[in-house]
Image 1: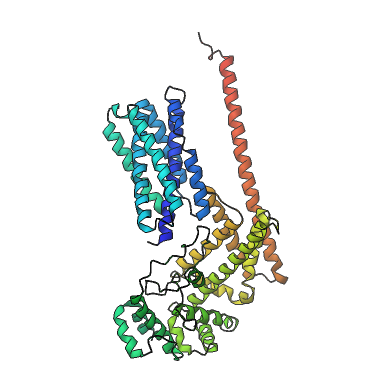
Image 2: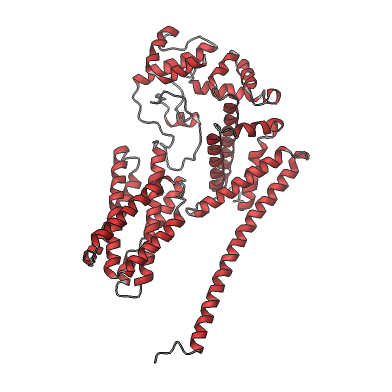
Length: 173
Length: 328
């Protein structure tokens, strides 16, 4: 596929991803906000990620994914339901999602480096920074007993499968 | 003839044809008419094998380039060395030109013929006859219409894309003026109205035959292209109107403008008032409708929020009154 198309897809997915992540954390906060875990989740503020991508999309005149309303609801529901499983549930959800996102960003970095690292230096920098942030969230989640929840393996894989599907679809629609 | 050209586009085996066509390898051949098209295509195939060009990309310059469909000119400004495209077909994204200026690609030739053909549209309508007449004014044989597989569709699509590019240039120029502080930013409604009016006025010289053009654009094999042109048109207009939304508004705004544009176009073809005044009034009203709707939507939303707050307050009061709120 043509280069502009590839770039468009990447940016569209990244934007959708950050939007979804914001909604997941909002869902988690809605349930656990007033508990001890609240301040922890709040540190994972990814609003700036979303704002940055809003800027990038507008600059490059990329169409946002039409599924945004779906991700709005789905993200919130995921966050809230994982939080209903308790603190460990929320952490497990975070670990799963952040792992997916980091993997995804890494493959984008690889793709951009293969294509033309010089032309995309700025974008590469942004993606690298965000990936590092996500890894940090992932590690924090692990530190806080994400793995101690029963059914961790099942939960984690289910969420990651969902993420993969969401990525695939958002690239195209 | 058409089949021959089709073959040319398909394969490398046709380099053998170069020897048949027998032209000098480098310089400008003095052939004319029919053979010129074949010759140009054949030599292009020959050159492609020599160059190893990195993939062409019309987005190779900054991210701020605005999206233009088939503008060979733009591609050539971004790569003045003018190496050949690696794909041996004449899709409209190809880079243009070879080293010399006298030498043109098949695409540039097509563009020249179609431009010349536009003159004859009032006479022959949007048809192969117009293209043939156009070719003849360029001293080419009228059989060179064989290059245009889509016939009248090619002509109409070319015209549409040409108008869109012109509009984009005008809007970019206005935008620059505003940036330089030499002009004021119009209100969105006015901007949209002016942009749509400017674009539709480009149809005026061909307005008699425009219904025919519209129906050609609706033919199934033309629909993907005509939709693409329409969507880039609407996207460009909103971009220069200042829209930078990245949520569902992106879609609703473009859908609304597409509706406005299409309905106004339809009104225009059966408008018989002086200078199409009825059409522009219709346009004003439609834009006003959309603006009102947006305003109403906002009002509904804030009213809804206020109502919810009111209800919550009432529920809370009720809880207090019935003593349910007390901790015993």
